[in-house]
Image (cartoon, rainbow, N blue to C red; front, side):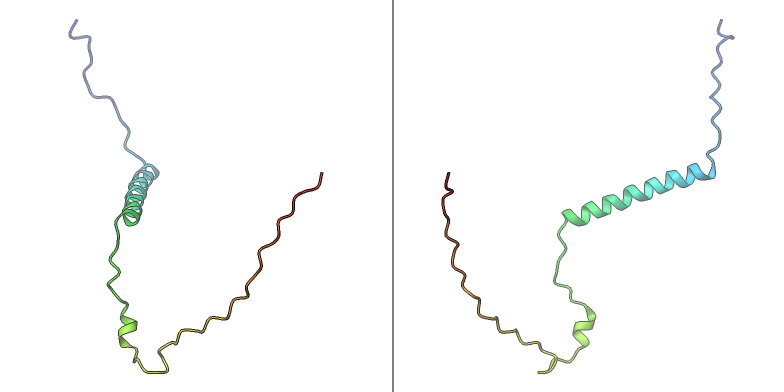
Amino acid sequence: MAAELDFSPPEIPEPTFMENVLRYGLFFGAIFQLICVLAIILPVSKSHKTDSDSFEPKNSETVKKPKATAPQISRKPKKETKKKR
């Protein structure tokens, strides 16, 4: 009775090239998504400045002056009228 049972491992075919591409592509996609989610959740310090800002000379021509705001036109609130029935 014990001789009748076959305990040999099942035959599993070797994965094809496209199956390997799909498997590693899914792993890469999952890692990329985790990095993106962590980038949203974890705050990034904003103390680092770009190197191009440190090389520019700061004289009166390159310093931008804030523009004067145009006087806003005051609008009168529209008068609400009741509907006539």
